[in-house]
Every structure is written in C-alpha cells, then in structure tokens.
Length: 142
Image (cartoon, rainbow, N blue to C red; front, side):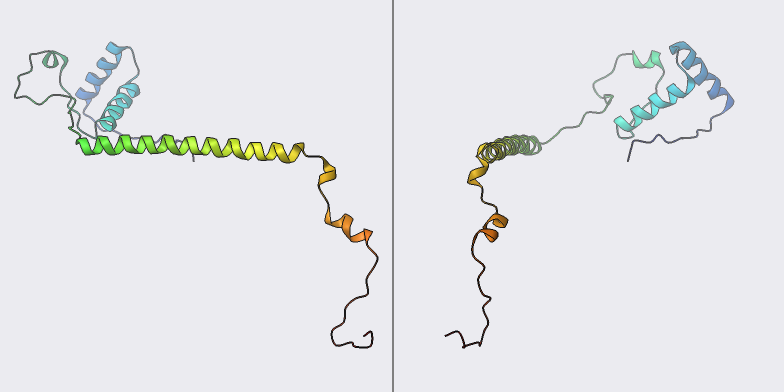
C-alpha cells in the first residue's frame, strides 16, 4: 500500500482565518501549507506543540520555564539495548553476505564442471539389457 494523503477540515473564526492568511502571505506560502506545517510539527512532537507569538518566543526564557521543544531523557539501558541490536543486525548482515558468497561459489563450481561428469538417470535406463520382471511367488524359474 502506498502512502495516501488524507484531508483534514478545520473550523476557525473569521478573525483567526484572516490572521492565518496574513501569516501565509508573510511567509509567502499557501494557507494549506501553514496547516500542513502545523500538523507535521504536531505529529513530530507527539502532540506537544505550543503556538506562541513570535515576539514572546524571543523573550528571555527563565530556568523554571519548560523548554520547547520538550526534551526526553532516555535511560542508558535503552541506549545499550539499541546499540546491542545494531551490532547484532550488522553481524546478521555479514553472515548473510557470507552465505550469499558461499552459495554463489557453489553455483559456479556446478556450472564449471563438464557435462560428462553428470550422469542423467534417463541415459542409464536404455543402456542395460532388459531384465525380466520379478514376480513374487513364481517359483517356476528356479
């Protein structure tokens, strides 16, 4: 399945719509691009997006204010497990490449052998004298 785009509808007041249109004109982009940027930002930050006016964004941020975008502390055990899995994946890729090289080498060996060395079963059937069929329980031939 491909990546299909979906349509999202927004209802905003006329005043906010005009503000959004001004923002789009200011940035020289379409109004739908403003919404796409907002939705992309919302998804990227797991729904934790705060829309603030630009002049408030540049004001000094105190140490007791939460930083934006939010930062997440990851436990060292998670990082170690991730690194271990990466090493294991690398090892498995190396083993796969080694197997592919070995299989290719075996195919090349089979292809290089003369056809005289290969005996076809059909060829063996016609070369020998025809034998009488065996019958179980027929003691006349003894």
